[in-house]
Image (spheres, rainbow, N blue to C red):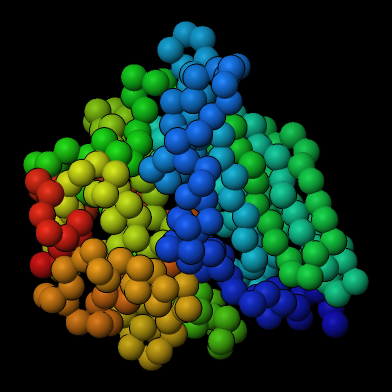
Length: 333
């Protein structure tokens, strides 16, 4: 089999952020790790695991914070170079979601070396390097293992002004909700894996950095936000509303979608990750005003999605608002 004939998605059981451990299971796994710390810490932990934020932040000198995060997953597209670009953009996004600037990253590579050519692994790394360099972020090495499935991502370190830190527990009632990328990459990727036909719109969205959106959010004085990845819009919005003690009201008609996403869901291309997302948020979400397909689209497991922000930024649609806490953490109208 030649490298050009290999479809990477066929060598993994899932793809992209849809292969995450389900949110409910994950919270149970890490429950004992929250609200803990060393007896004599070397530095102050400003943001940790307690509210499931996008990255950890440690205070350093000069009012700055050190932002640390990692993200990796199995192939979401068939082309190795494009897979590398998307995985790197997704890993860097967690720094942008905190209002920070990526400084240095290290690669995390798992490769079935007896099954897939090493030349494809080199293409994955090349794609990741190109995106990191476009972000002004060094790539300083990394770690690799021989694994049953191809996996790739990065551990990223960045810097943030602590007075301008964006976090998921700071949303305030009366604030609009903005979304900087359309939804739908999960279902379109699921279609691509089944049919071999990629969605150029989905690939472009996943490959695009959240750098400009992050800078715009910080400039607008936004202090609450997250990015939309494997837990879908509903999952990440639920986490944000729960951590902030408010309710998120979403205008379903205002939520943007990629071309073909709605038809893809109607055709049944819905990942297991998306269905698990919906099952997790359903008890905490008022979905009476939307159809099941609409609910699946709102729960669609995104890879390298946009920023979900408590505030307005130029060019990003407002999809709802935060209001005082109600019976449900999220309401779809």
